[in-house]
Amino acid sequence: MPGTNEAWGWHPRTLVVDNYDSYTYNLVALLTDAARAHYSSFGGSGEASIEETERRAQEHIIVIRNDEYSWETVRDSILPHVDNVVISPGPGTPARREDVGVGRDIIAHTQRDGHPVLGVCLGHQMIAHEYGAKVDQSVVPVHGQTSSIDVLDDSCLFHGIPSGFCAVRYHSLTVTRMSSSLRVLARAAGTVEHAGRMVASTDIMGIRHNTLPLWGVQFHPESVCSEHGVRLLANFAQLTRMAVGRLHVLRIPPHVQSMSVQARDQHVWKRTPTEPRFSLVARRVELHGVVDAGARVFAHVHSSDWAPVWLDGSDNSGMSVLASSAHAATVRYSVHSQQVRVVRATGPGTEDTLYVQTLSEPFWTWMQRTVDATRCVDSVGPAFRCGWIGHFAYEMKDDGSGDRESESAVDAQLTFVDRCVVVEPDCAWVLALVRRAADVEHEWLDQACGFTSTAEAEAWVHGQTQRVREALDVD
Image: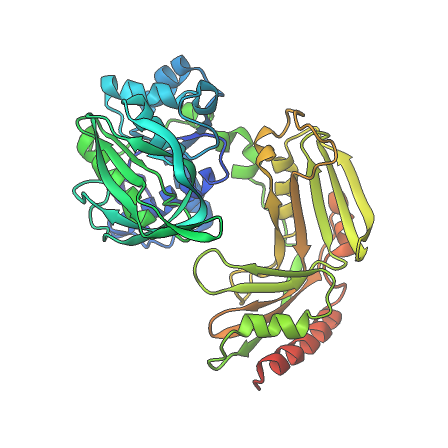
């Protein structure tokens, strides 16, 4: 692997403006994937470690929220050190300053300094609104549905992307009338579900400015079910090269990186390595072409489970995680009270409290330490080898403000899975964790996470493997 960025070739430095959307870091991940694809074309391995990928992301991507810096600060202290800008999806409307923040200024500033901008969903609508198009309620609001996208112009952003590709849509607003300064690049085709019936949808899905380096897409290229997301961002990188004309390699300077959301909490990006707390006991069961293996295992193994868990992978790999949250440790957090509570379910509707603390630090910092404290020794097995699963509410964007109206609302909930069955297309894995080290800061982990001995874990894995074989009728 080359030791310097120069060996990887030039790749644009990107400012991501976060409009407080849960998809923002999917965009960041997709930008990193596009960068890795670029690096591999220069002879790199394309298989950099997680640490190396994070380092490159820090050097080439900065993320700021749309209201945390003034326009003057962004203009003078950040924009001179990046090559392009990606404006994220988000709630609200492009007509409200409170919803779009500094992103509106960046789009307008393109007329003067030429920074290429890609707007996604709300960012797309912001570009349209800024340059005279009308953004209004869509005839059919679309939330979490896929559409076929007809490419009308493949000369720039959609170069090399076939017409009719699949993309995920989340929007109730849409560009309903174009202006003379903008051009339509793509439209939705086919139908979407609305109020129990299928309705035709031809909303504008891609635009560009006629003379300025501004592009927008209404769909979500970063969604796992959208096709050609990496190619689209690679095209944006190439359009940036054409607009910027810079061939030498530059990084975002450290003093600018320090302004990024990623760097704000150094514990997340630069963590101190910890000793793995668990070891893994794993057994593989070959499927031999069994169809609907996940459903069959779930029905047989969890039919009487009062707290079953079924989690499908987000990478189109066909992986499913089947587990139970019965007697497992669950972390809950409230933005309003800034209180974290760890509980263990003891029966339907009943639970024991293992730990309670009002945090004086961001929840993300506390949770990252907790994740680090539950690391498993590297071993053979599927991509998911037990660990934390759960969800975050939109209100987590305001973590630390205490502005949540309901004190009892749960804004983050994660359960630690210490034993499970992972079903892949060709095999099933039966997994269990064994505690191997103590942690004074996380004593509650010892009360609910992992088996106390390898023998206990192996006995559970053996029994569960037999049930899996029975469900699938395989040897």
